[in-house]
Every structure is written in structure tokens, then in C-alpha cells.
Image (cartoon, one colour):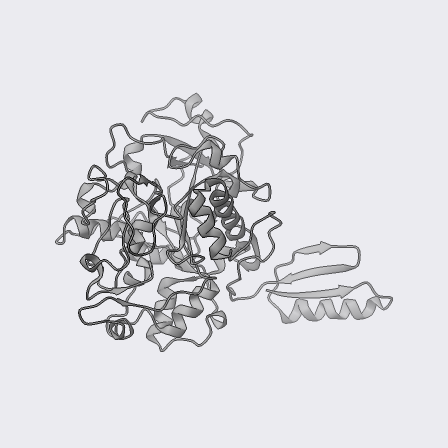
Length: 481
């Protein structure tokens, strides 16, 4: 985004000529903010420049990246308040408005970042010395979440993969992580192979401390004749504990794509044939979700990548609604992990979030971003264990999953035996750090429910190449490079 500043001057003719020059020489999206001594005109570019995480969010005590020793101190004290405050600060930065505009939308910071498929292509072509130099021509294309495909394969190696979903993701790296990925060519098979250690444990270099990876997850539904999209919403933990995907929740809100609703306390519907009054009580405005409209290229891409004969016929202008986001930051060796999901009552969210976590949301988070709940996993178990040589005997589990991503996983998905809590068999008994610790170039470990993973455990890692917790690399390897 290019900004031109014109100070008030006596010679208004010069200002007029300058404005005319801009109007005729640039593709412009006019957005003027008149201040006491300046007029700011934002000029639309045909490129999206990835933006840094904001340096000053106005949140007292929040820093990014935070000193790792400070975070380890929180972990030693099991300081859940400081951990949650930090997670909310990360959310505030991700959902801040950037200065980039695409298709008339002012993009949020996380929306400007390079997708892993884009970075893998750059690596296949020899990489870039500087990730900041990369620009995007459009939004990162939506895809079926890789973990859904992994889950099907882990459950049945001969499974016919179903790619017809209503949930889609765009895994992206911030500029620092993108710079690391493109300069080190970590998506190329030959590079990963170079880190192998015969009869030992191989490992790619660590991402930089400033690195952030995100997995935004969007719901796509078809509006009915009244302009309402029915969206499944998390009703809380199943009892008894079992696989509990969004198709099992039977709890819905309706989203008014025309924003005709007044503020109200939402009462979700729990029946397949709700009354008009029940639908009205369960209806909110689309602006209560972070959302955007598909462009022509995005619609065509989704249609092309759905199962043949099963595509619902996406078209330009269709809305997608952000319902979830996994976020990892390399502020500590095992990364910090926080996950966010849309809640119909964000002040009283269901587990794996809580009212206490909701009460800590900073005032700078407003609008649609304030309707999401948080769950954090800065350790695998309490008390926190060392990176190697620890144990979870007598420990307390830390459960942190995203309802829209892991809740539907059954026992057959988890190929890694849980020696900590053998009764942990389902996606609602997982921890982000535990699962990501198992990421290797071969992907042979699979997933695990919550337990401590020793990063030098030969059972998991001998003759493997560890991916510094990044399953996103394993899912996008350039096999012939």
C-alpha cells in the first residue's frame, strides 16, 4: 500500500495537480482520513505485501516476541493468566487491520501472509534470499485441512480420500517464517534428506524466534432464500467422551448475509426443523464473523479441488466465515500454541475455553474478532517438562484442541499409543504441542492425544528428520526437488 501525504499549503494549485497526477497514474481505492495537518490517501496496489506483526498494540505488558525466559517462568509457575493474556495479545495483532487492500477489503494482518503452498512453489524454484521480497497477487487459496486428510490416512492407509467439506483452511507463515522457509528451501525433499542422521535423529534448523504460523479455518455455506447461512456451533464436550465432529453437534446459528439483525443474545437451534421464532432467536449478522467473499479465481480453485460430481458450485461473491484458527509462535523451543474458535456467547464459552479466559480479552479487540474464544497449550502437561528427559508420571493433562478441527477425530486416527492416559483416545483429548512435536519429514509417527513427548525419543525420531513442530512442511514437500 502506497501512502501519499499532502500538508496544507498556501499554494493549493500544486496540491490539486498532485492529486490529479495520482488519480490518472495509479489504480486507486480512495480512503481519506482528514487530520489537522494532513490528508492521507491510500492507493490500491495490484499486489499484497505481507505485513509484520504490529509492534505496538497498546496492550499493557504484551510484547512480541516475548523473552523466552519470561514465558518459561510462566510455565514454571503454571501462570495461566499470563499465558492467556499473551495468547489474546497475539490474536489482537493477527486481527489488526493492515494497510493492504484487496478486492475492496482492508486485509487483516494475518490475511497478508504467504501461504505454505505459495512458499513451497518458491522453494521448488530455488527459493528467495529474503521472504519479505515476496508479494501475493491474491488471497491464499482455500484448501481442505491437511489434518482431515492425514486423519483419513492414519485411520486407513488405503482410504479413498473424501475432499468434500464445508471447512477450508489457508496455512500461512508471517514474513520472518516465510524468509526462513524460502531461504532454507525446507519444502524440498533433497534438503530435508540432507538433514538425515544414520542411526540418529535428524532435524531441520530452528525457525527464528519471531516466526508465526497460522491455520485459519473458514466455513462455507449456501444462503437460503432469506439470505441466511446455517452454521454449526460448538455446544461443549460430549458426554460420554467420543468423536464429536461438527456434523454431530446438531447446534446451529443462522448468519444474515445482509446484516439486518439487532444486537441480541443468541439462542442456537438444536432441532432440524426449527420454527420461525427459533430461527430468529438464533440469527446474527455476518459482520459478527471475520469473513470475506470469494473472488473468481478462488471459486474456480475450490470447484476444481472438490470431489468430482460433488462440487457445490462455488462462485465469485460467495461468503466464507472464519470459524477457527490455530496459531503457533516460535517464542520458546517447543513453540507457543493457541487456538481460537467462534462462540455464540464469547463471554461464556464452552471448554476447551472458559469464562476466566474470556474475561481476560483486552479492550483493543473489538468487532468480529471479539466473538472468538481461546485455548492455549504452552506446555504438554503440568508441571511443564524439559525438552528431553522429562516424564508425565503424576502430571496433570493440558487439553487444548479446536472444536472445528480435532473434535471429530476418533480413536482410529491416533496411531501413537498414549502411555500417560491410555483412556485418551479422541480428538477432544488432544494438545496442540503434543501433536506437533511428532512432525517429521516422513510423517510416519502420526498423531497422538495429550501426553509428554521427549524430543530425543528414539522410538519416534530415530532415522527421522524432525520438522521443528511444523506439520505444514510435511504436507507440502516438493518430492522431486
